[in-house]
Amino acid sequence: MGVKLVAAQPRFPRSACLVVEAPSATILVDSGCGADALLELRGRVDAVVYTHHHPDHISGHHLLEGRVRVFSPAGEEAYPSLELLARRFAGDRYAHWLAFATRVIGVRTVPRADEYYAPGEDVCFRGVCLKTVPARGHMLTHTLLELPGRWLHCSDIDLTGFGPWFGNPESDPLLFLSDVEAAASLDASRYTTSHRGDVLDRPRFLEELAAYVMRLAGALERLLELLGREGPLDEARLTGRGVLYRRYVPGAEELMEFFERTMVRKLLGLLYAFGCVARVRGGFEARGSCRAVEWVREVAERVRSMA
Image 1: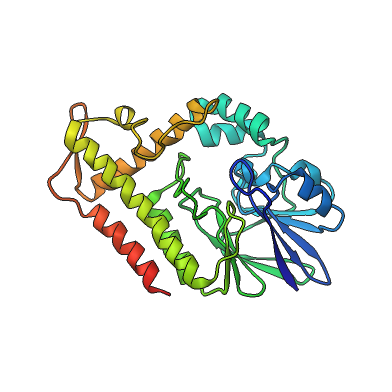
Image 2 (image 1 turned 135 degrees about the vertical axis):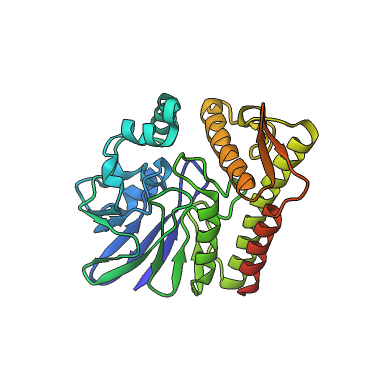
């Protein structure tokens, strides 16, 4: 039994796929790795396991539909159409999400699973089992997978400069940090993510995971700096100021503004919970001391110390 990473161009709007090969079955993880790769695999894949239904992870499903057994996280069955996914992920910007998902990412259909697996439940097909690990900070159905051979696939704990990403209305940065620590605690020999094309050993994975956490600390510091210099400010006036994105991708401005504003709102909530900001007329203002940034740094140090 072996595992292969299929990630010719894994950067968004694509994602990496994994192929688990055994004498009894070949299982694909996600379908966002591009039509060429999927067409090459299509004749020998028996099942596909989805980590979650973000568009870059399901974009090639139409090439597999009706040919494979499909497993998806429980909860995804509530969103059987692209329009429902759009409303789930982008609220009143759903039309922009729908246009971007279909025209840029290339999504044509939403997977209808044969089985919806519960959080933490093993997904087994013809004697091949994948262990699921819920990681709900990114979104409620987001799942990591422990694969044969001590291989951990971290999905959208992606270790890229684009993350940590918690831009969905249902996302939660505090849960994201809990998910990061959970991933670090899982002792594997090989680690992959959905938006990188390399396989990491444990020391490198933990070092990069700690650096990934520190990007969240940097975002909090930028928010506090803006509030201290110009406050009080509300989420609208804190969006588009470089807290999370230096620039918006041409053609995706509406969506990126929505996602950044969502993340700014959640970061303000985190700062408020720690007593770092106060809600006043006109938005929020910074308080004198802030434990939140120090706390995030401590999470990064705990991750690094697990090496």
